[in-house]
Image 1 (cartoon, helix red, strand yellow):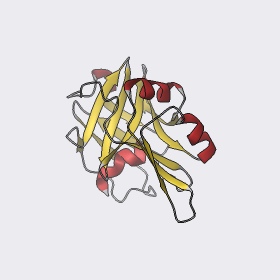
Image 2 (cartoon, rainbow, N blue to C red):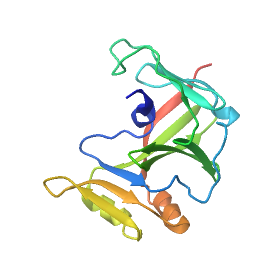
Image 3 (cartoon, rainbow, N blue to C red):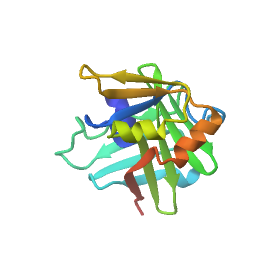
Image 4 (tube, rainbow, N blue to C red):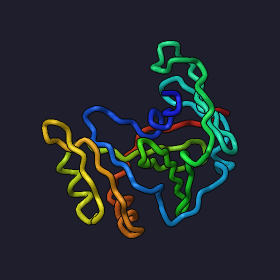
Length: 179
């Protein structure tokens, strides 16, 4: 699935982790941005020997490692659209990708020479339940053994702000700017 570079890059779903999804793009009260900010545009690299090119309204992944998990050297270009939304709230950006009717949300923080991506996934049911205690509108999807596999949230503005402060989003990858 070429489209899911976002999932590969921003929202890693490890088999032992619980996926966190949202019924609406987040933050739901913020407008969608038509472009990635200028300081985010350019070429970046990660520790996996991959380069990410970010344009005004698109990105693409270029693999420089032939042993990469990518199935081709250059992945499809992904553009901001109805199923890929970019939002901003208090100098923090949120990339929303629509998957199976829900939204997977990752947070993107920009600094001078790099981009830090964080995603929403937790490995422990106990930690998840503690972090989601204040969220009223939530649905748990369990596997055959009764363990939580996914959680779908519909938080209010205050609830989403609490989620961000509760460290539900954890650092996944740092992209360094190519000079």
